[in-house]
Amino acid sequence: MKKTTLLVFAVTASFAAAPSHAEVDAAMCAGFDEAAKLPKEQDAVSAAPENHRVLLENEDMRVLEVIVRPGEHETLHHHRWPSVMIVDELPKFVNYDKDGNEIKSSAQTQERPEMPVVMRIPPQVILHSIHNTGSKPFHAIRIEYKRACPGQ
Image (cartoon, rainbow, N blue to C red):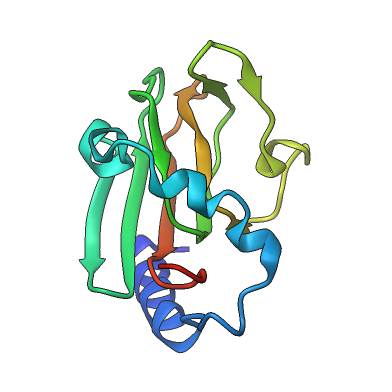
């Protein structure tokens, strides 16, 4: 899928599907209170700007393009809001926590998942970083919902 098509799809879907407090299930907001206390300097855009580019941001959402190049290891960071991530390039990668322990991703459980992979992700309270061990870039669009959980 062309990147432009993916971007148009993601941005359109984010506006059409922007969840309200009533529509978000409890699992998508698990850890929100803890995530809200995380240092802003460890937010993905602040801590790893070379891998997270803001495509759109307003009071309700932030849309990021996420790229991790072959051989690259991101800086540790977090994602404080629930999100939907659309992955259209998925090389081999390892996701690590702050102590260097591997975190298994649902995108890694299938041998060759059909692209794009779409994941619903609650706030990530664990600092993490991706190490791209493949030969092509990891590429995704991440739609973060700033006001989806009660208390946001």
